[in-house]
Image 1 (cartoon, rainbow, N blue to C red):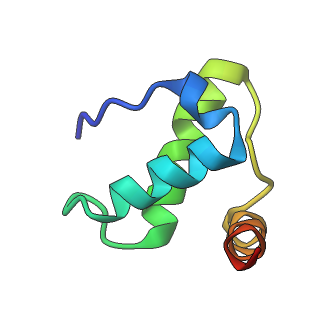
Image 2 (cartoon, rainbow, N blue to C red):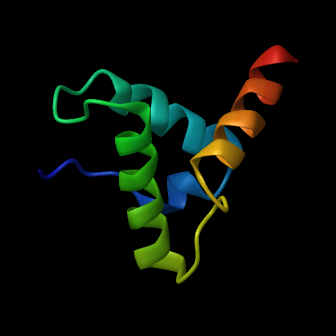
Length: 68
């Protein structure tokens, strides 16, 4: 699977959320967890650490941002 996501885009929460939402429509990803794992892999390669501690942490932060 070769889907290009610029790691700079993932620095902000808004950018991470936008990339997450876009990838949800890709048939390569069967679950939200798979999308999250893919984005974290890109982020980790670029910055040597994860953006979020785990999928549940990301999900809660995203739900909070969407509820504003």
